[in-house]
Image (cartoon, rainbow, N blue to C red; front, side):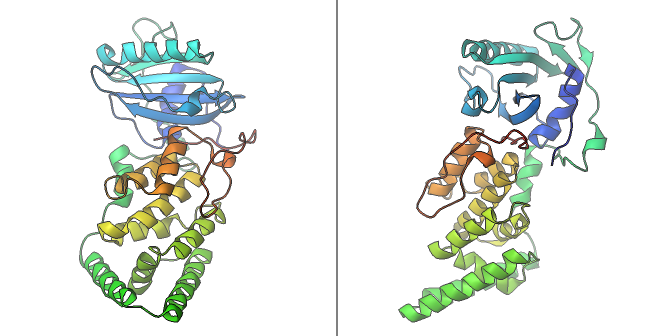
Length: 327
């Protein structure tokens, strides 16, 4: 998808922010947009707190292969945002990264810190709803997190019961041939639902949730994501996350994150990883995805998943790649 955005004025930049990061930022917040060759190549945002001594700026924003110009927008009261935006701008320029805009948005007005607006600022325009069909946007980060909220009601209770029953059955497997047969059947089910994405029934939900605890099945699922550039399987992983008990959410959450990130939706990928940051903070693939998101690494620069190998950047993105949304 290559949607054109007008970023020629501060007002236009502010109007475009929600579509570039995936949701409306909630003050206090710093949004960073990276531009290269006239295109927004990376975007991200950071929550701000009073007294912050340093900001964890994603390394991708100082990577000339990804962005050679930055736009900085602080959302929140000037007594908090002005010093931070000014400090980040000065730091970036010390690193030879051009900062084209340094803005603050507060109380419905936008103020340029470098003369980009009149001293009294300019009114912040309403969101351009004409862009929403091609560039979906969430109300806030909580709305993104809600994509992975546990299901509720009888359907969830039924799924948990089925998962528990099937897990007991699998735990009782002792013969190698039976184990092999289970893995083979699981791979066949995985192939079925990923080549023809569909709403999973209770039995499929239980079988896949348990099967993804097996390395062979999880590796095959990661490969299925790489074979799905349109992101059609993302709904499958999201469904499994929302119907699994907490201890079994790691694999589908990682798959949902990987699928979303491969599709350029780093904000959704980050939300999927937040689901398991307490449950499975040491999961290797989750850690690698977090690092890639923090680096603002573009999906086109990372080779396909290979079992036992790290997800690492291998090249710069092609010139017409879509932008990668951040956290």
